[in-house]
Image (cartoon, rainbow, N blue to C red; front, top):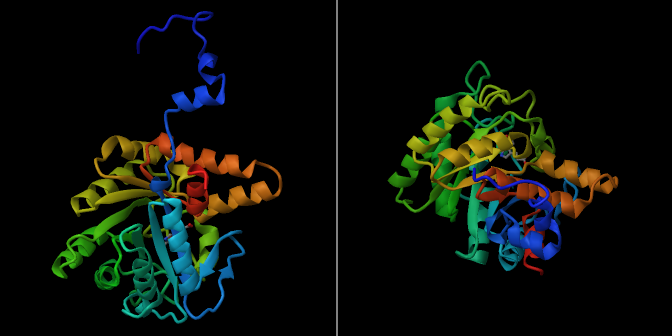
Length: 330
Ligand code: PBG
């Protein structure tokens, strides 16, 4: 670092004097196009259903999802990540591979609405579709069966690509999932369908509110497949594997408690890096703001700017459309 002299000639506060000066010297900026909106679509409802655990977020009908996607396009949002909530679940998560399952229908709806103006992504995981709520299928002992689950993911990859997803987001933390999904896409001719790997996905209490959002039936936890919050080195191992298996983009999830991992990845990868500001992070800020504890809009912008500063390229956030509108003065 260059010698910079010292006080009183040197005064960092000179660069903080006015909003215009602060704007000029800001090292990181949010852009609408960096933001990805996670959205829920529920089968068999006529009106959107509010999610009590996530104030301001709804389970969409197919129709209101189309509108939300169109609104995201107008706001300049970069992408939308779809989660399906089926009417019927079973042990295999059959609705997840049914070409007419709710997620596949929603993908077709949204693609016909937005074409290529918004990157349409789909969560590739079984937990929304299984009656036991795990991210995979179970063996005879009731344990999540990694390799049997991979066969289900390969099928999901093909139906989701066929339904029009530009990007698939395998989020189940099964070993080998990225390779299996890539191979299934290649073999079915979907060579341009990209894979956003949930690479460092931690077994997190901050997913709590999401469980209501997708009507999860999970009992117990996901500790045998999601990462232990205590581990950093292990996230490098996951990263190496996902890149070797062909991930086009990688993700760290949740966001705020794992900013160190975001920074680690930013220094190591040469693919785009995403971070997911999860349901618990969202609801904590909304609830704190509702109680007058923090300035809502400022807290939202600060949390998102923190991800950019840590080195993320894109951010999944339930505030994507609202923030994009604000950034563009809409
Ligand atoms: C799994 C999945 C989860 C989330 C996204 N994908 C839940 C989990 O792993 O338990 C959580 C997202 C959030 O909390 O906002 N399909």
